[in-house]
Image (cartoon, rainbow, N blue to C red; front, side):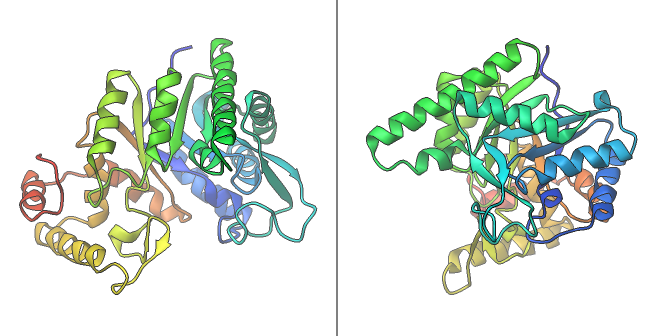
Length: 332
């Protein structure tokens, strides 16, 4: 089974799992419908962790109600968390993040755990199947190690999880396997041991941050034939006006350097008549290894504009000015 060509934009589904707010089912379906209209073949990026499986459940329900045939859509499922009964007043994972859940989720990163997550995820999707799979946040799993012995055991668990994915691919049950992590050193670790089809970066390649380690890993993955998907391209919203930088709230007093950078960046975008959001998305595509970006929205009206961001044209002179003014550290 050949790996699918990735569309230029992937659509995240955390909102379908009630992340921070609880949209109605009809509101969720309206977003899914607009995604299907906006691109020839939609790729929905989901996970068992999103709402303890609620996102997968809602996605399958929305697609079926909209009359979508399984072969008309691509679904990515990040595996590693499985749904279990809710036995406490609030879910035990990511407290405060998910609204009005009826189930809990527990981590299950191992050979057997990933197989269980794969089967459960497809059951939640109903008539649909995830053909694109990965292990969800292996960096967080490794980062929770108590000591060196525990770290080695957890590394073995992660590699066991990928053995499960490789078997699913060899059996023709999935088309491609990948990895996603905020700590890109873990992407490097996995790629040293596993033949990946794709890797997802987060908060690592943006106009604001694009260090040599990240650029070196991009080159290595390119040599291995691994496609790269870039996510969190706005550094969790900060680059387009938010007050959270990489999911941490900051102020002008705590991070004057970041605000000074953003002020210059915003002014320069205004001078060239382009939106900061378009510049952030298009910066990804300055790197030939990056073939797609992952974007999220809870608003149907924003779906088409997200697609347009991925196809925006940025004047070459803007990149040169950003380099001259020290806003970026690469030559374009």
